[in-house]
Amino acid sequence: MLVYIIKFFLSAFIILIVTEISKKDGVLGGLIKSLPLVSLISFVFVYIETKDIEKVRLLSTSTFWFVIPTLPMFLIFPWLLGLKLGFWVSFSISIIVLTICYLITSFILGKLGILV
Image (cartoon, rainbow, N blue to C red; front, side):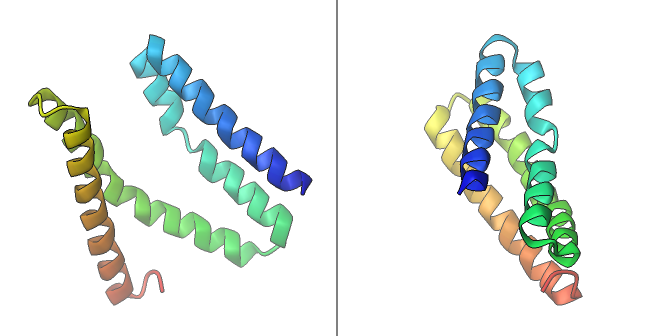
């Protein structure tokens, strides 16, 4: 139970820090957010809880491949905001694009046998 509490507060703390810093300095907030903190912390917790190197290896590999389809969203979202479509419309379109990119990536990776 202690591990769950630690994970909960660590996750909340990271989100708190990023949002508070982003209010004052968007570039610094983006830099901190782009750090693979969640991935690194996840690797550690998966290993501590399972001692299964194969699970950590699969998590690392799948994280790499699923970062790629997120990249278009980070270009489309600010572009849509610049078109003055409003936050929620821009956000919604970006999430739809992200979902389509994830589906395409999953399909391709499955066909290539990279991730099963």
